[in-house]
Picture 1: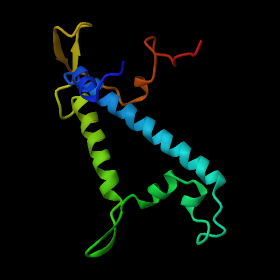
Picture 2: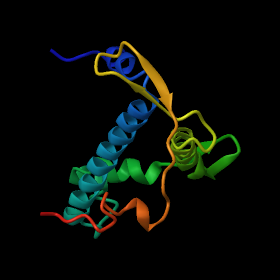
Picture 3: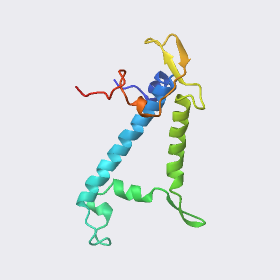
Picture 4: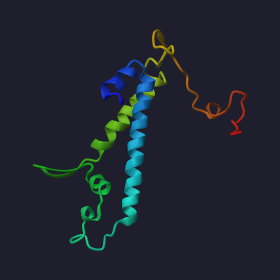
Length: 143
């Protein structure tokens, strides 16, 4: 039995770090699917006759929609507004990063395994090489 979308959001509603990570993973899955589909369509695309054999007759689905992103035709004429597609995503991910790392926000909500009690935990990320080192101060090994 699948959970409806609102049930999934109520599970992660009081945990900003989990809410952010769920949406980042969803964006990653969609971008990965679109990228792999675009590459597979590009592998079979034949641009020799765009009039009698356009993209949609060749079974293309992703590439025609990707070419339309940010291009609109309104009363003022054609407009290339690709930033309107990209900038909100960059702003949302940037806000989440600042919020979770306590630079401009409270931190990460940490609760017990049952979700009964919780507190805001301030974190101090390391932005240097030390952030990649293991607990013993050496590079982590894969073994």
